[in-house]
Length: 201
Image (spheres, rainbow, N blue to C red):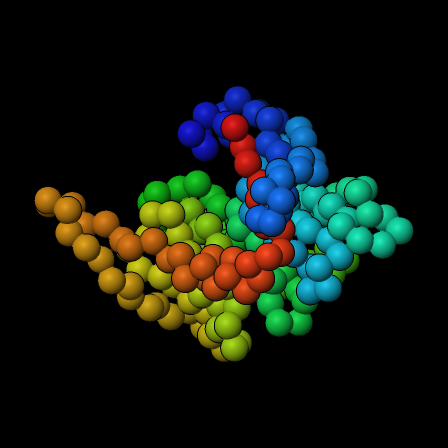
């Protein structure tokens, strides 16, 4: 229950790696506050994990002289959700405002970070983008995922547009088919490479 975790200040989150060959699970980090999005760096020498409750992103080093150490990578202006890397090695971080309805508040819904954690770009939602959970950059277009929105907003050439996604009916309620194609593609790239996940218990 993410609402309970956020309200109670839960810090039982962990960053873990799973090796599909040995079937071994290793805990890399403990004590994370609402552990959320995870992303590998372009060179795979470190991994980022979002701490939603603390509004920051941790960096855990996997290789090099700093291997097995961690540090604060970035403090962000909102509650970070998923983290997605682009083809330049920069990171898009979705900032989830937790709302289900439009507002007069023009929230920052996403930030783009460089490899040092510096904010390069901010994207605003003009008050009508609620509960943004991920932002994925594909060939100059930002596709935006939401927990509650029935349409997927996306940014292109600094303007906002919409892409409809298919729905299915269940009784009188219409629900969206979850966008899982990005996750599937990323996971299937290297089936023998250990997978890294963040869990809030």
